[in-house]
Length: 546
Image (cartoon, rainbow, N blue to C red; front, side, top):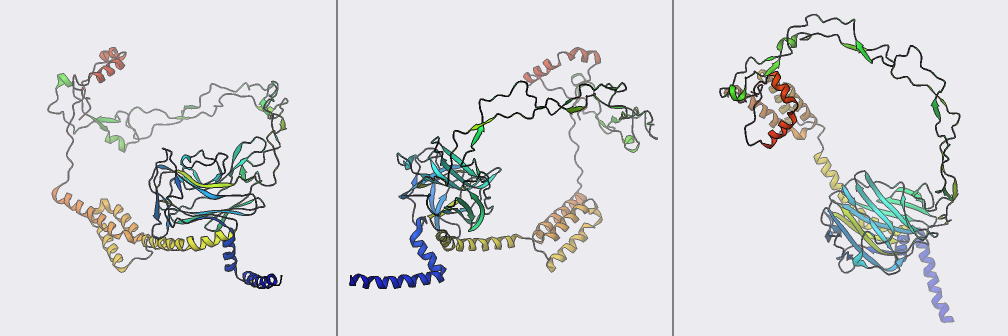
C-alpha cells in the first residue's frame, strides 16, 4: 500500500503541474487535444495505393495520381484527366460515431485548373449490414454525409447533405443545407471544415472562417426538414364542384355604352398632313445604275433581255422624299377597342381551395439527429477539369485539432500561393503612370494622327493612343497598330489601291406577264425540279446581276 501511495504522489504532482501549464499555454492544450481526439488523418505523404481502393466499375475511367501540389513539395491525391468520372474509397479501421460530442470533418482541396463544371466533395460512407465492397463503390453507395465544393452552370455551392433515416418508414432521406457558402473562385489551396456540435449546431468554415451556420432540427436550415410536419394535406380530399375561386367577376348588370364603337380602327389617315415642300413626285426611289454595262458574254436568247442593276436615286437623298406622296397614319382618338364589362367582387367567392389537413403518418419527434456511423471515406465525382488535388482529410472530435492541422499544413502553402498570385496580378496590372519614354512616344503618335493624308483614320488612331495612355503595358501594340495604318496608307498613295470591279454576272431573262401568270400555280413544283436537275442545265442568271 505504501508503494502504491509513493507511486501515486508523483503522478498527482505531475498532473497538477501539467494542468497548470495547460491552463496558461494554448499550444500545449492543442497538443494534448491532438493526442486524444484525432480520429483519422490522411496526409497522402505516401502513395495511396494499398490503402485506398479505386472503384472497379467501368464508368469510373478517371486516373488517380499521387502528385505534388503545384509549387510545393507536399503530396496529395490528384484528379489527372478532364471530362472523366472518378471513384476511390478508404475503409476506416474503426467506424466513427457522430452521435456523441463534437465531430469535425475537414479536408483540403486545390483546384489547380479552376472548376467550371464538376465536383470536389467527399462522401462519408455509412456502415452497411452486408459490409462494404470497395471495388463496387459508386454513386449508389449509401453515405451519411456528403460535403464539399460543387460547381456547374448556376450551381456554385459547398454542399452539405445529410442522409437521415426516418424511424417511422425506415427510409433514408437526403436533407440539403439551404444556405451553403459559395466555392472560392481562385486556384489556391482551400480548407473546408464542417463542425457538428452536440447541441445540433452545424458550422461550415472555409480556410478557418465561418461561412454558414445552421441547426439540424430547424426547418429554416434544411430542405426538407429533418422532422416532418405534423400534418399533411389529405390526398383523398377533393374540391367541391360548386367551389368558386374567382375573387372578381364581370359585372352582369353592366351594358356597353351606346357611343362605344368597337369597330373603330386604331389608326386613321392624318387629314391635316400636307406634302413636304420639295417632294419629288416624278422621281422613283431607285434608278438604273448609269455606270453598269451589259457583260460581253451576255446571250439575249439564253439569258433574256439584260437590265441594269438598280441603285438609290441620288436626287431622293437631297429631297424630303420621292414617288407618290401619301398622307401618313395617326392614332385614332375615337379608338376604344373591344368593350368589356367592369370587374366586381364575386359574391360567391370562397377563396382558394385547399385540401384539409390530416395527421402525417411519417411524423416523428427528435431531440437530435440519429447519425449513422462513418465506416469509410469516399470520393465519387464527375468533373470537366483536371488538376483537382485532395489533401489532409481529417476526422476529429475537437475543433482545436482541426485548427492546429490547418495552421501547420495548409496555412504555409496558402501564404506562398497568395504572394505568388499578388505578384502575378501586379505584373499584369496596368501601370498608373507613364514613363518619360512612353510620353514621348505618345506625343509623336499624336502628331502622326494629324497628318493630312491620315485624316480618314485620325479618330481611330487617337482612340488607340488614348487606350495606350490608360494601359501603358500595351504601348508596343499601339505603336505597331499606328505604323501598320501609316504604311498601308502610304502604299495605297504611291502605288494605287483602287478596288477592282467584280466580274459581271448574267441575270435571268425578262418574263412576260402572261407567262408569269401561267407559271404561278406550278412555281413550287418547278423550283423542286430545278433543285433535282441542278446538274442538267446551268442556272439562269438574274437580269439584275452584274
